[in-house]
Image (cartoon, rainbow, N blue to C red):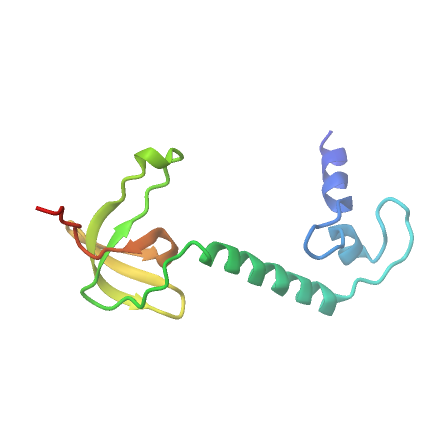
Length: 130
């Protein structure tokens, strides 16, 4: 059974690069046994395009905000029911690394690194009209 599973993994064509691992490693199609040449530059370009597309999709939901030390953020909850979507916080930003998108926030007695995709800026409580 294990041999069949491994063969299936080596023979399955990857969705991003368009080649199977067997084609790249051995230079042959695993099913038809024909010689082939994998274009490494084309694989690199396809991988970069897929990464860019994924980043754009993930960043589309993020609120564009330039975090600074002392700002407050809410940690997004991962609940499936939108009616129960309560966010944790607010927490104070200790530092922000713009190159990798990591915030350091002060939580209780420790500082926690967290990605900016998992937080939302906190602008303060909205007061009712009284």
